[in-house]
Image (tube, rainbow, N blue to C red; front, side, top):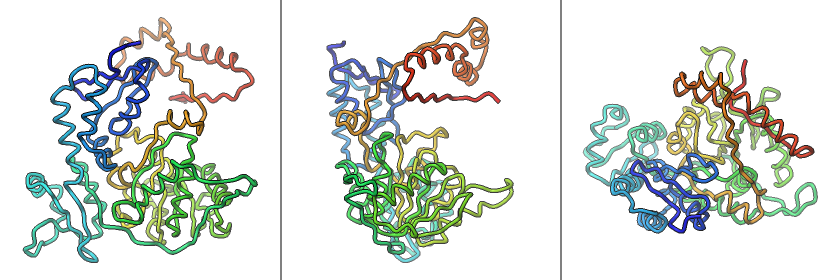
Length: 434
C-alpha cells in the first residue's frame, strides 16, 4: 500500500487512481464530479477528463478552482500544465452561451465572449439558424429551432445554457403515499429528495431538464415518481422494454394516489394515451419497413405533456433524439446509472435532455446500506494456443472479440457456478454466435 498520494495525472488528461491507497474513497468521490470512469480493474482505476465531463461539473456549479485544488491535494506529482490549461478552457466554456426567450416565437443566444461570438458567426453550418437582427446586437433564432441550435452548437464544441423556460402540460394532481399498497411504510430517501429538488429547481428556468445519475438498485424510479408528484402534470415515461413498463405501472399504483384509469401503456399489446403514459424506445421507433415513417414518434407532440421521463437515458436511440429536438419547451428528466453510451453520443444527451443534475457514488450508498455490497473480482483467462495464434494476427477490433469469446472462460464459469451453488447467479456476455 502506497504512503504517497493516490492519484497520477497524465498529460493526455488520463487520471490513474490507486485502489489500495488509504485516500482512495475520498479521491474517487472527488473525481466522480468532473471525470469519467474508463475502466476499473482490481488495483488501478482509470478516469478521463473530457470537455463534456467538465461542462457537467460547471452545470452543477462546481468552481474550477475547487477542481484544481482537489487535484493538487490528491496528485502524487505536479499537474501537467497543459492539463490545467485545457480544463480551464473547457470549464469556462459552459455559461458563455446562454439562450433566452425574448418573444413568443423568438429566442436570443447571448454570447459572453467576443472571440466565441466571432467564431460562431463564421461557422457555415450555423448560418441557417440566425434571424434578421433588425439592427439589434446578439444572435436571434426562431423558437422552433431551440433544440436544433443546441445540438448544432455542441457538435462544434459549444454547450448552451438554456434559460428559455418550459410550458406547463395538462394538470394532474399527484401525491405520494405514506403506506404503499403492500402495507409497508414509504418515504423517499434523502438523496432521492435532493435529486428531485435539484432537477426541479423550485420551478425556475435553471432547472426542469437534465439527468440524474445513480447506481442500479438505488431507486431511480422513485425519483421519477417524486418528480411526477412535484410537477403534477401529464407525464410520458419512456423505458427500455415491456417488463420495465409493468414495473413503472406497479410502482405508480403502489406508491402514489394516481387512479389506475389515469395510467396507460403504449406498447405492442395495447395503445393507450392517458395522463400518465408508459412506452418503450422500441415502440417509438417501430416501423414495418425502413422506408416507412416513424409514426409513433408523434406521441411526443400530439399530447400536452408537462414532463417526459427517459428511463436508462444512455440507451436513447437516434430517432428519439431527433424527436426530442422538437420538444425543448417540455420538462425532460433522464435517469441512468451511467452517462457513457456505446455510440459515443453523450453530448447529444447533454444538449437535448440536459446536463447532469445529481449523482451519488455507488460506494456511498453501499456504505449507508441503501444498496447491496458489491465485491468485484477480476479473473484473467489465458487463450488456447490456437486462439492465441489467431489473436496475434488479428486487427484491434477482431482482437476484442477473440478475447471475449475465449472458450476457456466456460470452464471458469462452471467452477464459479459450482462454488456458488444454491445462490442466484446472473451471467452477462458480450457476444452471441449466430
